[in-house]
Amino acid sequence: MNVNQQKKASQINNLQKELEQNNSFYLIDFTKMSVSQSVLLRKKLRENSYKLKVVKNRLALRALEESYPEELKKSFRGPTGIVFTEDSPIALAKLIKEFSTQHKILSVKAGYLEGQYLEKDRFSDIAALSSKKDLIAKLAYLMASPLTKLLRTWQAPLNSLGSMLSQLKTKK
Image 1: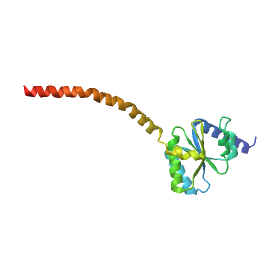
Image 2: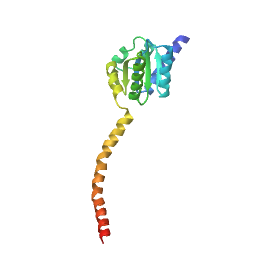
Image 3: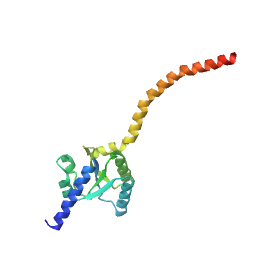
Image 4: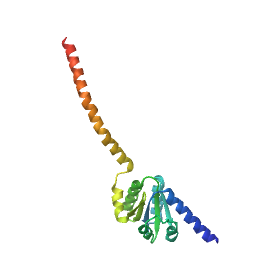
């Protein structure tokens, strides 16, 4: 095996490890992006603990296992970057959408969210969702709300009794 083949095999192995470690990723097309915009995007991604990897399509297809859907594999055409996230695909989608809106250059080809293929048409729907933390907070509020109302209902007679007793005390 020559040096070039070893280098490609190493790149394929590294990409396979990235795909295994991150259960969600988006494929982006950065065709008309300038160098300064690319640096800015990478900086924003790094600040939020996301990773961007520009890949050669042939090597990426070799790195994808059989478990990935065929539709996803068809998205590896033209310049392709993979943006990875371990735990917050919605926040990443919002960041990509915001960057794309500001600079009007970036587009999403497809995605893979927690084991599910995502068509590019559905990307806007994902970016519009609330984050996982927000949804958990809303659920906790909804679960606690009936208990809070029940406690207030139980406290009302006790408060009334207390005020009646204080009024009786002042009359005597």
